[in-house]
Amino acid sequence: MRYGALGIPYVHLSTFVGRKGLKHDMSQARRLFKSLKQHSAVFVRDPRILPSDNERYLNMLEDYFGNPYKDRVHDQRPDLGYHVGVSPPYIERPPDYRGFIARMPPEYRPYVTPCNCKGDPGERFSWPIGERPASTAFPVQNAADRVIPSGFKNEWASTMDALGEKMLETARTVCEMLALAQGLKRDTFSRLLKKAPHLLVPSGVNLREHGKKDTIINAFNTDLNALTIHGKSRFPGLIIWGPDGQPKKVCVPDGWLLVQVGQQLEWLTGGKLLASFSEVVSLPETIKAMEYSEQEGWPLVSVSSTFFVHFRSDHMLRPLPMFLEGLNEDHLAAIDSLYPPILVGDQVRHELKVRGFA
Image 1 (cartoon, rainbow, N blue to C red):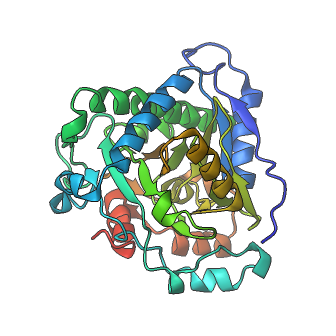
Image 2: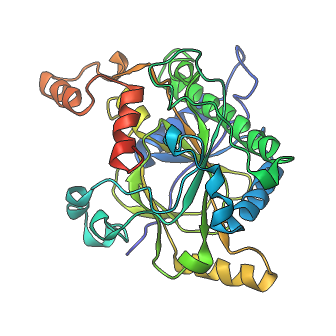
Image 3: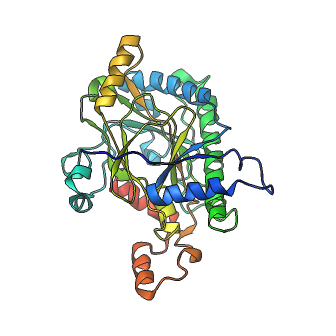
């Protein structure tokens, strides 16, 4: 498989943080929008998030996922669709993208296609972040139950919240910058984040069992939510695809975050911003990191710092009028076919069913 240069821009959020009503560096907002349009992804630096937040989080999650599997079974909540707590391995299946993959140039295709993937070996721990609605048509998706593992009662909530709540602020700033870059009201996107089912969802994989070269960890897919934010991981292996269809190996640099477009934002913009495809694979770089970690006596557990940003479940998801202006009837009909009106909660429910969670 060939990979081109990353080419994904870096954007500083500092000129927008805490500056409501003040002059902003609009060049950074325009740079952010352009990157999400061209690459479906962007690197951002948020001064509110400290490297120590991510380090503390990774240390704790490595201990958690490094314990025997039987110690985590009590943290599963299948009655809540695994929207909270830990999910078992191999429950998450990739959507069937075989037709889409067949149209890709062979050198751009993912490592593992749905027809030869039995499911992802990793476990996900879902931790609610932010306020939930008092009333909703989707109570399970908006479950506020917080599962705290028995061996981590003194540190779990504070560690998860320290990173998750700051990532939610990052999401709000990114949404505001997107709106301002398009000449829209500042809260055009960010207002939809209020009382939405945001989740900090670390995934954990034992690399002693699943770290062999070319082993799939998370199969080819797009994220069903609005935005996905990744902090730095200790083991490389993330590959993403933007609108050009070219795969890019991504390692999040120290002090930066990777932001990817999800399905809900694609829907809202009528496809002006497209959801990023991604997969996680044990690459040669992963093997090298494993060898170094083993020499240092560190855990061979890959943990992701993944935050899923959602729009409000009871919002009717449809392309905003400003993204339909100037389009001819045929183009409008195509967009209406691709992005028909649907409640966000129903869109999530459909995607979860496709992926084996419902």
